[in-house]
Length: 259
Image 1 (cartoon, rainbow, N blue to C red):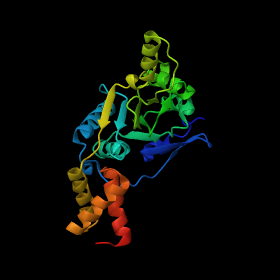
Image 2: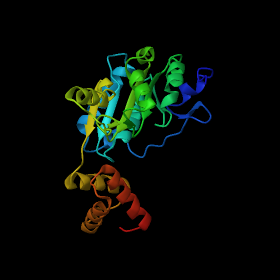
Image 3: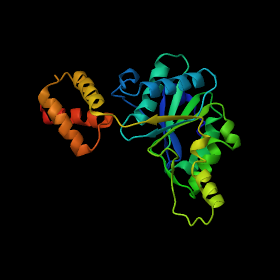
């Protein structure tokens, strides 16, 4: 792989994806249906990620970020939106490169090639988790902090996971306290290498309905008690009050023409 051969599309595009079978980084058109300002209920998380991203763009101290926690609460959406938000306000641009979590073993080549390009890159990996003895676990841990490639100045990692420590606790035959301690330390050894942790927590009914109202307004649909009743019934079926559930509900009533 030699993505450094043609640098032109790095100037023309801001979103990219690594295609493993072709062994290429390709630009991809992304039409975000929501803006950074419209992300509701995660103000503190937005502030942290925005400040870090601005610092990275401006060559100020910045971190790799782990966004962890409740599903459907905007972790991945925040990453995509913050890139768009920062780029619309700056002459310099940050490029977002998505690497699917089954392509971790390609990161050595990817990061090395990106280091040759005069652009800033955020490598985005969604919904990542490992078993602690996996080869990819050890490789990614080294790449984040430990390798010479960890010091590449134009690359940061923004990753999402439902797991705070990215690792599933394995069933171990631990025979003493020392082995138990070592096992636990290894379990958190990857997440500990991220300088910034941003936690996302389950929303409540009140916040859910505010998000529903926001999406309804965007779709020029009037909020009503009947729609509220349908929305709450939807949450029972989905089992949560997440922003994703709110968006899916509004899409569903638009499709069904129930308003």
